[in-house]
Image 1 (cartoon, rainbow, N blue to C red):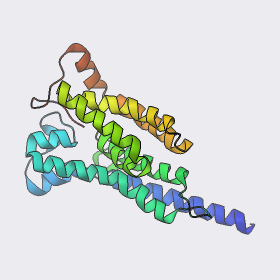
Image 2 (tube, rainbow, N blue to C red):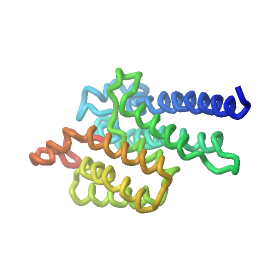
Image 3 (spheres, rainbow, N blue to C red):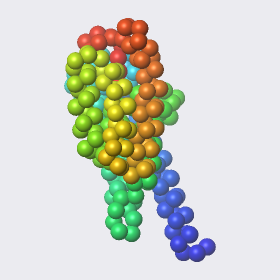
Length: 217
């Protein structure tokens, strides 16, 4: 095998292995782990049943909700950050295709964790972590929108849905690399699917507001 083909083959193998590691990291259920370490509560059996920060806050308090939020974001941030240190092109620039694969793998890990029989969270916080490294400027605008909508409407889910729609648009408007834009579109679509029950409740006027029951990131 020519040297360059062997190099490409080895690089693809490393990317595949790192993607698997990214998935396994993303699949760690931060909120559930915290609940088991510091309480006797199974967060899947209380509130909305979701493993995200909102439900953890409801069942365990704000401190654990914040820790869950940070942990879920870190699961998305670390794979792309570490990947950027390991996978660069000949000129030292980041390989956005590889980084997008790692970020998306971590995101899928949170949505479909192997540790929980593929029943995971809704992906908003982990997605934020991915784009905190790959697209910080659009993410800041999206976070402002999220906070504003959640604060005014008192619906966390409505804020999440809005960010899922806006972020891909901003990635295109800011002319980010194609792999990053494609990942953003796929993530946004999956977030919308994961929020299908929230969408139904919003349309029926039955969605719970902040401070009430049954919501979750």
